[in-house]
Length: 137
Length: 337
Ligand SMILES: Nc1ncnc2c1ncn2[C@@H]1O[C@H](COP(=O)(O)OP(=O)(O)OP(=O)(O)O)[C@@H](O)[C@H]1O
Ligand SMILES: [Mg+2]
Image: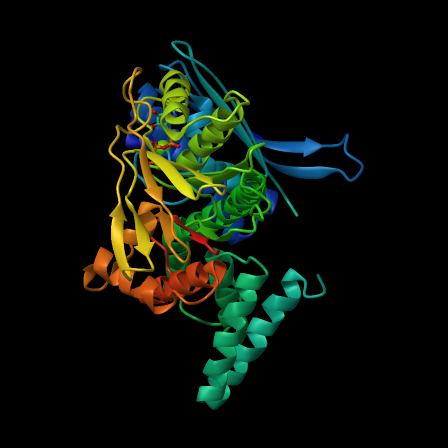
């Protein structure tokens, strides 16, 4: 079982490859079909943001294990990083209803809710790095 | 939670199986009840879909591959609904929080209004003030000075809801910061106008009517700042006339003069002060006419002042299907003897 996939995102094909890689890894890790779809959707949204707003970047998908917590956990970690324009108003974009698509629950807050852990780091003019983890139950 | 996730999943399997055997309305009724249950347990649409797929695979082990795969496709399409569902939950929590905050603010605001109406032998006073939503942009105030004169203020912040309520609290402090000694209505409005002009955002407008009743001589002095005119009822003539006071809305111009008017109040006469929520009570046929309002007050004029204002409010509220469109305040001061 491969424990990490790195996918370049520069075109819509890249988005599809990233989804595929994430789904495969999620399946191997033992996620059911609903969680596989959730992970694929989260990757999709992050990759699409890279494609739309940063032009290019990378999605890294890893198999992770947390041995430090009392009950050891396993899961999938998604890292989406780019050297695009960055997000200056992170507080705003993490509010529901900020997305340009206007869809209820879409965009970054939606990704956060699909996953168990979510962390965003972005500096205007330098780029964005978003990390999200889904744990196996 | 006694119903664990897998318990609910099993239940789905059972009722689906039952339905496929009997194919009757009872089964569908159970499905509808189940649908409430999934919402209660916050199970998202894509999850419910997977219950279905799991059950079908168990019931029909050799279902065509492509039919099975079509569920993956449907699952992907349902993801958006799943995300919307979760957003809805978090928005609902947020709304509850906001509501709790507003409730606290609303009860704080209540403390800005007088706790009790002054009791004077010669006057019968009735007051009602009801916000359209939780917080009010109407304000009223009573002062009784050392000469037993009764000051009454009614103010209406243009706009409603929270911004109006914030502005209303500033009016309260502006009133409290006025000089201690008794002010004549005109002078009082001039003072207040200065405070408002300096302290309140320029896009907020406040109208006010201020009156002072001298129970020794039964004179009512009043001035207005662009406020909705009230009424004066004369018992001897049995007529209502408009209680109008010309004056600029507060906060527009720094040095504004307010003309003072005066009435000689006879026994049984009364003064009606109101906010525009009373006259802008909108019914299906449009705003109620001031004439209609007069008729309404006339109908109850023999009752104690507090009962009149309550009855008038009830009738107007009913006319609007119990949904106020604007904050509603009505004050009646009647000379008893
Ligand atoms: N990688 C990124 N680089 C720069 N800006 C970004 C990036 N990701 C998101 N943004 C900014 O954050 C905003 C919100 O993103 P989000 O994905 O939540 O919604 P959206 O992309 O506008 O709409 P939706 O995803 O619903 O189609 C975007 O409009 C964009 O301005
Ligand atoms: Mg997006």
